[in-house]
Image (cartoon, rainbow, N blue to C red; front, top):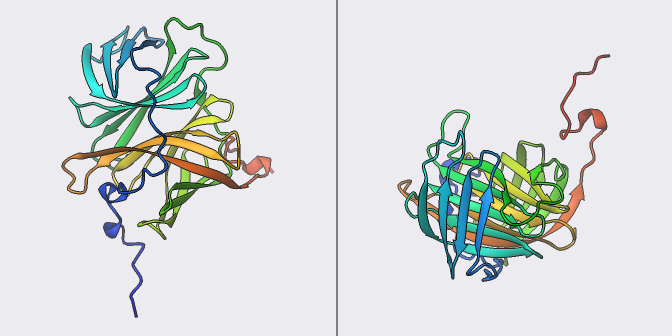
Length: 282
């Protein structure tokens, strides 16, 4: 008789490197829509970041504004760009000069809004995950800003979604609260594993969300942008970034997934995790 694996022994869980083979089967084809274009984003501090996109690359120049302690610099990085919707793009580039950092850039050329998510790989400590993420909204110079700017949202809370990354990889997500989500592997090398990890959700357009998570067992994090407008045909674009199996380097790869809504939980108003909790006065 075969002894079943001890799923509770997190020491045996698959490192990020081991997940990569075949995980990107549903990845969208990168687009060259932005090749040859220069796009500059400006935040409320006056920090300006200029991006000139090439064929699989981006040249970026960082000019800090008032109160921004980041030093000015200019670099070239390998870059993938994905078209999410009309005039909406997701660009992903790890920093070659600082492999502990990777940038996810959302550009809405229709609304003039942008959102940068900087993922930083360090060491896990009490109360923190190994990957930390910084969310930085901005405006795109030369495009009149219109509509709502990207902002945190609780719209996904209560949804249970099936995500299929390849014929061999499938997971379900349950969006539990503004801080937590639960995942379970339904198919693939992690089948049977499940956990509850930190998440952050921002609304980009109606029905289109940035969903980012940070795992506590495996030192990794992810930034995805997901189109939830058709509940039977969801689509996501994303990146996984974290430590390699040896713990001395980084693993970074992009992927995609097709999804569908499995169910929607509706909590009584008093117990709704999307609302600030107040004790029952009675």
